[in-house]
Image 1 (tube, rainbow, N blue to C red):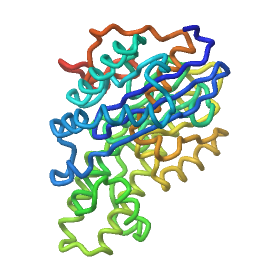
Image 2: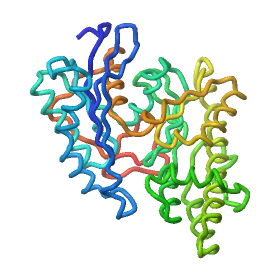
Image 3: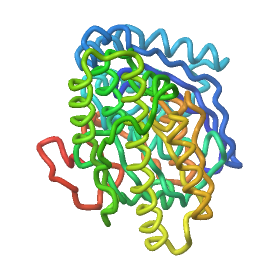
Length: 366
C-alpha cells in the first residue's frame, strides 16, 4: 500500500467497557469517512457493582465481538476482502479486554491476509478531530476520560509532548464516583451534568486543587473527598441537595480544568516554533457542555479555536482506532505489527518525558 493511496481500515476497540468495531476510509487527499461505527455498551452488566469489573468486561467483549464485526462490515457494505488494514487497541486499558480485541484482530488479519496495526488508545482520541473536522497538527489537546486526564502538545502524527497529567484520579472517575456516592445512574458524567443543571453552583465551597501551580497537572482525589463529606453532612440527601452538590462539583472541576489548560497553552506556545492554532478536547468528559462552554471562552481569549468531536466520538469507539492507523499509514509512520505484538495495560502517548509520579512493573503510570 502506498501512503498516498486511499485506505480502508477495520478498527477494533475493547480497552474498557465498550465493545466497538468500525470501518473507516481515508482518501488520498486526507478526507476521512466513517463507513460504519458499531458500539455495544456494557453498563447494564456492571451497574450492580457501581463500576467496571475487568473480568465481566473481558467476557462481554468475547461474547459479542464477532457479531459486531459482521455488523460493521455489513453496515459499511464491505467484505473482509475489501479491508486494507486491521487495527486494534493494544493499550492502555484493562488487560483482559485488550487481549480479547487484539487477539480477534490478529485472527481477522490472518484470515484476510492484511497487515495488522496495534494502536494506542490515547492516539485514537488525539487524532479524532482529523476525521471529524479535518484538523491537522499542531494543536493543544485536553484528553479527559474515565481513565485519563492529560494535556498534550500534538506536534505531528506520532509526535506528542505531555504537558500535564493527573497525579491521582482521572476526571471521568471523579464524575463516576460522585454519581455513585449520590446514588445516581451510571455512567456518572451525564447524570451529574443533568442534576447540575438545576442546582446552585455556589451552594458548596468545594476546593480547587492545583490552582495556580506552574506545572499544569491535575488532582481530583481531594475534591472527591470534599464531595463525600458534604453529602454525609447533608444526609438525608434530597433532590435539591443532590442538584446543588452536582452543580458545585461541576463548577469546581471547570475552574480547575480551565486554570490548568491556560498554563498548558502557555507552555505549548513556548515549546512550539509557532503558536498552536487550536485547543482540542477529546474523551468522554469532553461531552460535558459546561466544560466545553468554559473552554470555548478560554480558547477565544488566547486566539485559539476550540474543536471537539461530536459526543458519540468523544467516548470510546473503534472509528478513532481505525483513523489513527490510517493517519499513521498516510504519514509513512505505520509499521505493520507481527502476530506476536503484545497488549499493554500502560502505554503513555508521550514515551519520552519522565514519569510524573513513578512507574512500576507494567510501565510508566503517568
